Image (cartoon, rainbow, N blue to C red; front, side):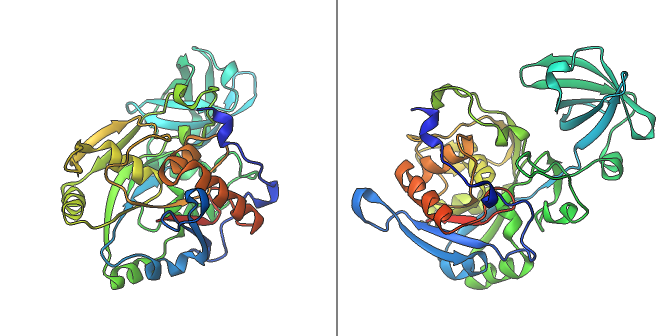
Length: 347
C-alpha cells in the first residue's frame, strides 16, 4: 500500500489557525458507512457538533480521552547565544526528559542550554527519534505552567496565546502527560455532555498521553513499513466493565478521537469475546487498511493531515474510497481542517 495513496491537496486557508469563537460551534460531517451507493460509498450528511446527541443511538457508549496537555514547549539559549525550542515529550526522572528540538541535527551529547530561572540542561543522548536531556533541577508541571508554552502543532503558524491554555485542552482533562491535545475532544462542552446523558448514552473515560509522533507524516514509501511511535495509556476497572458489558449486549462503542480508538483496540484481551483489559500499558499499534476492528464501532474525529498515520487509520475504519470522497466533500464545502478545525462522525 503506497503512502501517496493518502495524499490530498488542501487549500492553506482551510487550515484552522484559531478555534471557533464558542467551543462546540464547529461543523460536523457525518459519514454513514451503510449509506449505500455505487462502489459502497457512504452517505454524507452535513450537521453540527451540537447536534451530535440527536444523531447517536441511546444505547451508545461514548469513550473520551481525559489526558491533559502540558505546557511542554520551552525555549533555551545555547552557549553560543542561539535561541532553541524544545518540546518535552516524556519525563524519565526528576531531571531527565525525552525531547525533540527545532534544531535537532545540531544537538549533540554534551551541548548545554540555559532556560528561565537559571535552569540548565545538557544533551546526554541522541537518536533518530529525538534527544534525552538532563536538567540541573526538577522540571515539574509547576515550572512548565510558569515558563512553558502550549505545544500547538506546526501547521498552526503562530505562537500560543493566553486563550490557547483553555481552548487547547478538553473540558474534562484530568491526567497531565500529553505533548499534544486529543483534538476531537476539544469540541465538547458541558451542555453537549449533558445532552448526551439525557439521550441515554453512556460516557466513559480512558487515558492516553499523546506524543508528537501523532502529527508526523509517514516517511516510508509503503505504509506497512512505517514504525509507529509508542504512547502510554490506562483503562480503569469501571471503564473496562462498561465496555465489556456493552460489547456483550450488542451496544455500539463510539470512540471520541483516534487516541481513544487506539487505546481500546490496544487493550483487547480476548479477540473472540471482544473484551478489553483494565490497567496501564504502552501501545505502538499502527492501524491501516486491512485491520479488523474488535471494539470500536463508531468514530468521532477531526480532519487529518495528508500522508499521516491518522488519515490512514480513519481510512481503515471507514474505507479508503469513502474517506477520499468525504474529504473531497469537506474541502468543497470549506470545512476547517486539523486541530482547531471541524469534526467528522463515522457511523
